[in-house]
Figure 1: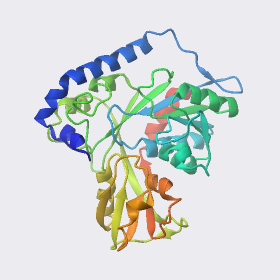
Figure 2 (figure 1 turned 135 degrees about the horizontal axis):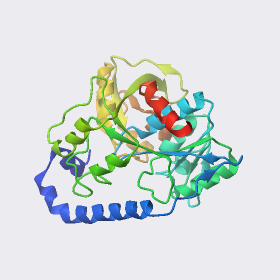
Figure 3 (figure 1 turned 180 degrees about the vertical axis):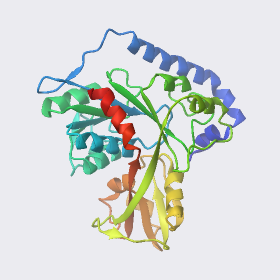
Figure 4 (figure 1 turned 90 degrees about the vertical axis):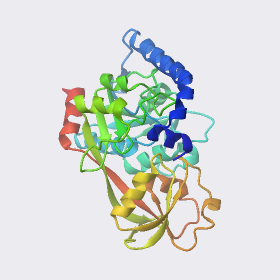
Length: 341
């Protein structure tokens, strides 16, 4: 976690110096949303077969990891189990392409697709298209694939894009920090934005949503409003070289993490009785062999998201941990009913 991120979640007093900039950020975010709401009804997205296609935005109001990608995968799997053909669009953060839109293939590289879209494609049998202009991504996907429902992985603040449902994820381990807008706090939009979305999902341990010190600015919302709890359930470790299942319980490893909240990965390793030396990197870090030259004494363990970026590297001693989002099925039933009944 960077220095300013620590300040956001520890309530550092010096952040007040940034309040004028946060005020401007809040005014800008509010004006974008009001412009979106004041538009005449936007045209619905239309499938090749001519029927209207609903779009679900899976997003957050804070920076950093909240579990959107595993949630998106779980949601798409549920909708597919109900007989719905699913398409996914994403900004494609980390892609080095110069031209868009781009349809992600299972054999794509992270240079082309970015890490999260590639992981989604490898886990799901559905079309995935990236474009910083998500409306362009949607139109491109619909020009090539006849789908029944679209999911936008992130894009809550992408107000050029119409949407049928908004689902916001919150990291239950970190909450919403000091409740302030960027750069004074971690928020992209104010806490009040949660009142306008369709569903709030809190990614937290199975024992429940924690009360965090210094959380007064946002804790009241969670006490007074309904939210759904999600847990990230660890699966098995697999070899990065050949995807064969591995057992590393009790071993000492280097724990590499380039995700938004690396502490969640490290806590999981502890729960799985894996001893580790933490090697955190920034979210979406572009890994190279130079990052691993000193990691020779033990095996390397990493997240599944990081694994998609490291497959082209010669890391014969690396393993990755698969994870899945766990929610009550009745939550997905509510989403389905709101869209299709």
